[in-house]
Image (cartoon, rainbow, N blue to C red):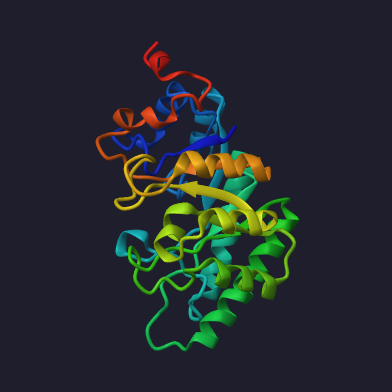
Length: 267
């Protein structure tokens, strides 16, 4: 049966960030993920994880100035030192929080830089990050993201990500496969999962259109969940979607999947 992790950047954001851990546990989630922990001290987050008996399955490396619209800097040739400093910060948080894998956002392609330079910068940065994470016993992930939501995002297709991974050649580098993003860019969801399972380290979901909860759009999630079971995917599935009408109101699709049934959430 699939295992679902609440993405606390997207879900329960009716609450302050540190209060979302309790809300996720009460809803029946056994694990959480989020984009970034860096606005809070590691000890604050670790205490919430322990108190509510939650696993942390993922967070991202620092990704530049998010509030200003940056979405990663790993392909930016003029920010290599900043990237490397961010790797050290992410490892420090990972060790404090017990997370075993970190995601690297490639970033929006800067104007005026040719593709060969972008590709080489990304490969070199990933090689550096993979080496540093290996020393800490961590896995590194890279995530293709659709260019409708984030125009000019450099890493945007599964085949491109897999080719970059092969060029890096690190045994702790895996694909983060976001079903929503790849539905928008290429489709062939089940076939990609079946073909490349060994290279997929984490799966995320949202429906399309709208990036809302499963059941609101065109993706046949019951079928994909069966496929993931059939092919032996044992990792978590990150629920990185925008609730259509509030988090609690949109959790009905999880009935039957979480150990705590929806009727017991308020108990």
